[in-house]
Length: 386
Image 1 (cartoon, helix red, strand yellow):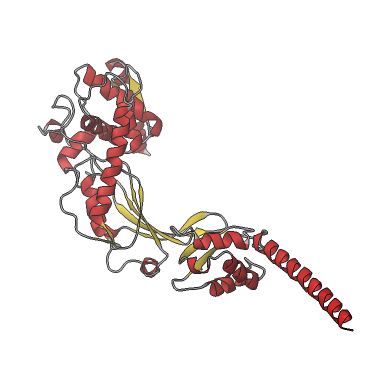
Image 2 (image 1 turned 90 degrees about the vertical axis):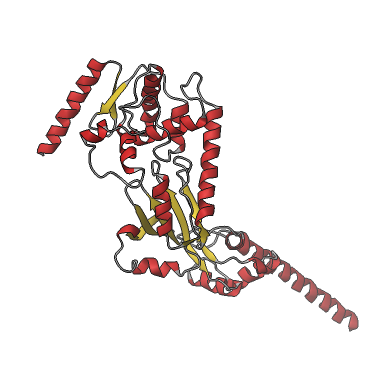
C-alpha cells in the first residue's frame, strides 16, 4: 500500500512539476511576446507610484493582458525599485518586458507635455505642445509671447507648470543677438538665477537646449558659449586656405553677417563668397544688417527700413563707410553660417540682390548687378500695386 501511495505521490509531484514548468514557460512567453496594444499610448507614472498601480493602468489602457504576470516579471527581473516617474511612450504591440524597460530606464520623459520657449529674431514665444502617441506628432495647445502678455498666462500653461513630468526646451533661432537672448531668458518664469553682463555678441550657439524647472540662467548661457566655442574651433581647424581672416573671431564676425543676409540654406556659402571676394579686392562690404546693428545695438529689431541719414552716419558698424569687417559680430550665427564663412564657395561674384523668391540674384559685374536690381524694383512695384 505504501508503495502505491509513494508511487501515486511521485506521479502527482511529476504532474505538478510539469504543470508548473508549463505555467512558467507560458508566463515567460506572455511577458516577452508582443502585447495587445493596438495603438501607441502615453503612460504617465506619477511620482511615488508603484508597479501595482502601473499594472492596473496598463490593463485599463489595454496594453497588457495579465497584471499578475506583469508584476511577477518585474519581481523576477529585479526592477521593482527602479520605477521612474514621468510620461513614457508605449509603442503599439509592446511586450511587458519592453514596457518595464521603458519605465525603469530613466532619462527624460518620451511623451506627454512639452513647453518650448522659442527665442526668435523678432520676438520670444512660448508654445505648450502635447505629443499624440498615435501619430508621433506634437499638437500645440497654447502659445503666447511673454513680452506682449497682459495679465496672467493662459490657463493651459499654468496647469502644466505644476506637473512634474512637463519637459522644457529653449530653442534659439539663428541670428538672434546676445541681448535678445538674455532679455528673453529673464522673462522665462521657469528659470532661476541672475544674469550679470550680456555675453559677447556671437558667442552663444543657436540650438535647442533641454532644461529643468529652476535651471540657472547663467549656467545655461555658459553652456551656450561652450557649444559655440566648440563649433567655431572645429570650423576654424578645417577652414579653406587663403581666407581674409586673421583669427577665429574675425571669421565669427563674417558668419554673423552671412547669417543676417540670407535665410536660404543653400545660399550661405555663395553669400560668404561675395564678402570674401570683396575683402580680397579691397572693396567695402556695404551690407545693411551691419548698419542696422549700429543703430539698434542688437537690442531688438529695427522694425522699418534704413534711412539715408543712417546709411551715411559714421558708426563702427556702417560698412558703407568703414573698410573691412565691423568690430564685433552682429548676431549669434548658427553652425551652418560659421561653416559657410570658413569654407565659402569659389566664385567671382561681388554683388547680390533679392530676386523675389526669398533668395538672391548674384552678379560678377556692376552692369549685371544693376540689371538684377532693376528686376527687383519691378517686383517691388508690382507687389505694392496688388
